[in-house]
Length: 124
Length: 144
Image 1 (cartoon, chains in turn red, green):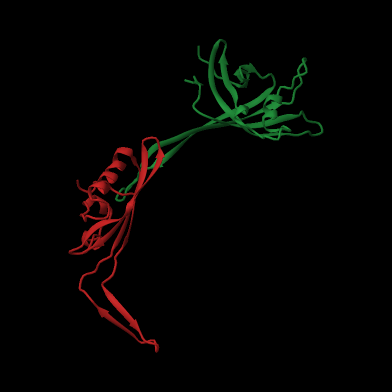
Image 2 (cartoon, rainbow over the protein chains, first blue to last red):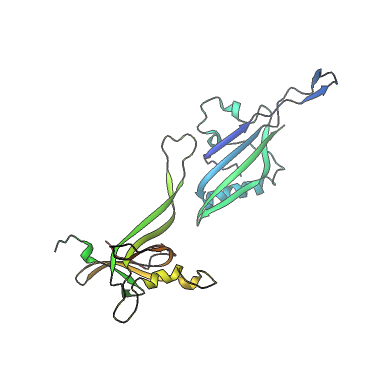
């Protein structure tokens, strides 16, 4: 089962970082060692407000399908809808895939209507 | 026959009994809407949320021949000496009516009296202002 093809109400992206180790001397001098050439650890928070319970269930089903945070997956273009830049700038970087950072948070708004918050992390 | 309704056609019933000295009532229906706008949309969109109803009334503080106070039913719900305050037993049944002879257009509901005020001024008739908040769905809504 693929990630639900719904357009989020809001989105927050953090571009992660390259694997860098920083050493700081007592003098204040800083040395940095780059351990890899792939940026990772990007995070993406998606908020789906006031969707039907049936659609909210899709996220719970997908979370179960991916064995929680175990399996990685790619996002449909719907998740990046409204972004007019290149989609690869906002998606998991090359060779990265998304996994759940935490379980989907479902808030029941009224009978039949719920809001879902998704937090993903990009991993190699 | 066509008719324009006025204050003469209005009445307020407390538990089925018409209150004699009501000078005004108002009723407001509200609908909370839930935003369903998504990224990329240019216009906001909504889905219906929870409905709510509230209103207010003004009654003269009037003593009938039998000694009962017309506004007393309302005032006693929130102005009382009980230590328990307002409980679920204080819910009241109200009917707001616009009548054309036997043709009655009603809004009936259960409600809590949420505020009541009364005062006395030189040269003025004493009246009480009450506000109410409905609980649950309307039992009758025959305005149309």
